[in-house]
Amino acid sequence: MKIGEMMFYKFIRPIARFIVWVLNGRPHLTNPENLIDGPYILVAPHRTWWEPIIFALAASPREFSFMAKKELFHNPILGWILRHAHAFPVDRFNPGPSAVKIPVRILKEGKLSLIIFPSGTRYSSELKGGAALIAKMAKVPLLPAVYQGPTTFKDFCKRRRVTVGFGDPILIDRKQKLNEAGLALINEQMEAAWQKLDRQIDPSFVYQPDPKKLDQEKAANKLK
Image 1 (tube, rainbow, N blue to C red):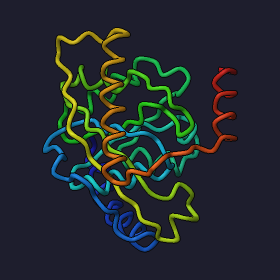
Image 2: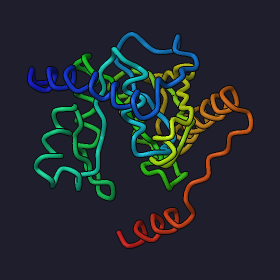
Image 3: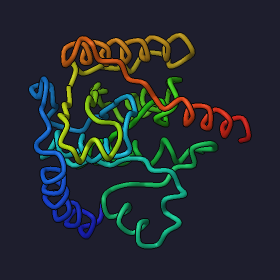
């Protein structure tokens, strides 16, 4: 990790915190004692595009890296900002070995944690095994987290309550096989942790993705 990137992150974080406070106020935290002192992978269901910012602020002072779709890096200004905010590009449809090697290296360096949305997009409920594989190779735990709050930016700016919940860490034994059965077990643990947090925050909460966007996402996946 370059010194310039470290300084930029430390510079931009209080600015982001102030902007979030102006637009929505201070996020409410559930189970902040579950935050880990050391590198880990924060795993969450993807519900809004601004979640990475909210999670990174809620779990500070720990600094985070995160995956971003490669198309965002085509813009030179946005690409520069993303790279200096510890993001790295990933091809969503053809990830390649770097999608695992880069985050494993980052986690092993010990200075950053990682934010991953195992479903990949806000409009998919299918979990993939990347987070478990990275956690096992980097020898770090998974930390389940959820966002509850407005899912449109208009509602976010109306200062409707935002709550972030942190679950108990999920440890992956180095001897555990990440075959179909092994990944299914870890996915079940993540899903159970998210459901527990959602019930703890608001027993009546139900996340409903935009059905039109869901159909568009499915259609796009079929074309790839």
